[in-house]
Amino acid sequence: GAVVSQHPSWVICKSGTSVKIECRSLDFQATTMFWYRQFPKQSLMLMATSNEGSKATYEQGVEKDKFLINHASLTLSTLTVTSAHPEDSSFYICSAQGLTNTGELFFGEGSRLTVL
Amino acid sequence: QKEVEQNSGPLSVPEGAIASLNCTYSDRGSQSFFWYRQYSGKSPELIMFIYSNGDKEDGRFTAQLNKASQYVSLLIRDSQPSDSATYLCAVTGPSGYSTLTFGKGTMLLVSP
Image (cartoon, rainbow over all chains, first blue to last red; front, side, top):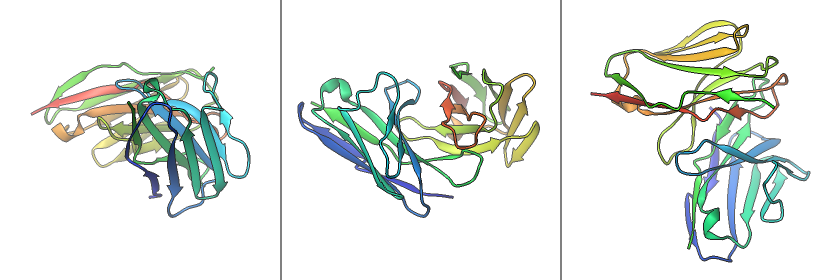
């Protein structure tokens, strides 16, 4: 199956710093990638939909200036958490949609962010 | 607004039993239906998908879809302790390229 790689898996940062998370589709081209956030014992919450070469579409309540998404190529999307605060500590997961018409999503391994 | 409902559980079954996980969805135009398994602290992994009414079997897993009732289920035969995880139901809209809507997941616990 299709492989989506996410990096870093774990990141700890100080409050006020910015953190970049990369999401790569390794063996297929992903025109659309999705970024999710998951708090402990909660469901996946879609943050934004990232389309190659265009601006991301953010879900209601997600600050686009805080969570910067760049999808510069068909295989790479990045999420930058700017001026991170402890409440941003969460599990961030990217996914990419395959090219079949079934809508199947392939998930990255996730990135656990801890903001001190 | 699309909604996907799942019982949060936990659903407890003994090893070797059949586990039945259920999901209902609100968007009658939904086309594709997915079951993902998520272990604690890990990202979801796809178990199987279904888009036609009826049953679809893959090994110990069987997905069942009833579009008239807006109901999709996952059966796990011969449950193993390693099946203990949260199972997420996800649904697309009328277009196969639309965003997946996830349910909150059902926690399954398989006891030895």
